[in-house]
Amino acid sequence: MPSIDSRETAKQIHLYCFGSLFDLRLGMHERKRYWGRIALSSIIVVVLFFVGLKFYLFWTPVDVLNLFESDSASGRAVQDVYDCAHHQRNLLGYIIAFKNEVGRPPQSLEELINHDTGAMAFDKCLLGPDYEYLPENYGKPDAVLIRERATKHDGTLYLWLHGLRPRVETTGDGTVHLFEDSDLITLPPKEKLKAAESD
Figure 1 (cartoon, rainbow, N blue to C red):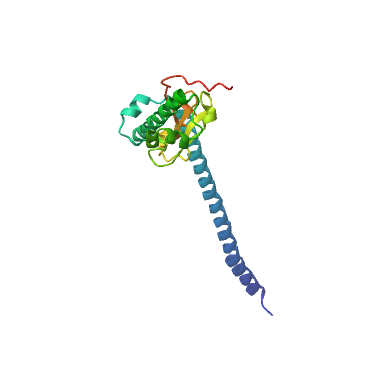
Figure 2: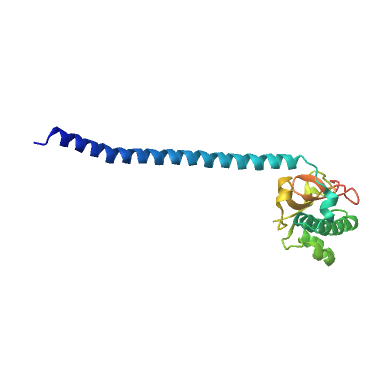
């Protein structure tokens, strides 16, 4: 029969081994919780920083003239959509000429090109995608007359933070917009377009 001393010794050994293991597991759990809190706090700080930066830049006026004169990525992006805007304006010139001659806007770009093949040079974006033409919106200032079917114009972080997404559209009154849902940079109409009167 084991003596009391041997039982106490065994008990101490058991507590030492398994108690240390328990303390180790508890320590690992605490460390995981600690680093989890650090990671979560870091994510929150980064998100709040970018959200705050976006709101600050969104409400800060964009220096349009500086963008046009800049050789930065944003300046080149603006110049790119500006060139495309002039491309749409040239196409609009053919549409206006068609209406002045025929008495109504062309019903499609195909009809326009068949009437004057010169319009073929402007029926698609400089980067490739075809333009979509919506003749029913001719003369309507709040509706799109010409737009890119799929924009390939590159944006930049600076433009994105200011809420500017490159997409060239011409509204029914002849105004050319360079950015989606924004009137920051536009080409005003050379002449106010009037919708064809219904019979």
